[in-house]
Length: 267
Image 1 (cartoon, rainbow, N blue to C red):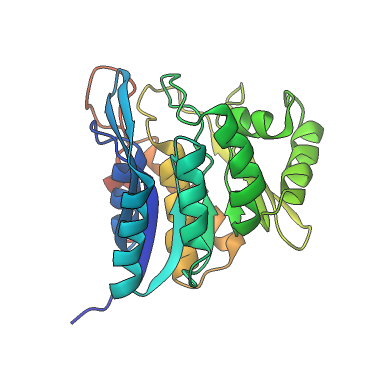
Image 2 (cartoon, rainbow, N blue to C red):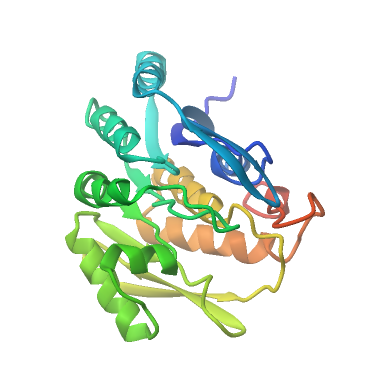
């Protein structure tokens, strides 16, 4: 009987199946770990946008964490959409209860279609209370700009932003460059030891990119749970996205989901 490494995703659902917890579980399955889940909220969502959001009561978040801790041996955790301050605080409280392994924080703030998924006071709570718990934080450029309070146009500004975010508490910082203009993009990785790594990617002009942030952070989570270094985990995540973005699937009429079958070590 095969024994799988067990991980936990703490996120919201996506009824369209492209992002959020749905993208997490698909990615984690592809990277050969078993995913448990704590649902923080439910979205009515498709490739055209987010139509409605319903955050779950914090008592239900607590109950899900209790169930997970009672039965599973979690080796790593990732967080996604947490919606508001009350939900962020509920998650932080539960993450502090027992050792669940490395924590990957994807600071989900805005959906691909533009809908805001994190309230203003929740952003400050993420910075003050969640980031200090993080092994890795993975903001994209717009999220990093929100976190540091100004625009990031140059590589020097991105480098300084990574240092600023690291002072907020996370051990390792990845600022994703998918929103950069041009034929290429670069992810900026600042490790806990102060070393810097630039990860290159080819810009893919496609509407089939829904769930890229969730997918990226999920690969990192799977790799950390399996004992890989942060550098190796981030490199694997970048390579996976570089591959599957070139193998789109036709689903929905708008910002379509990624092809999670299109890459990884087990295809």
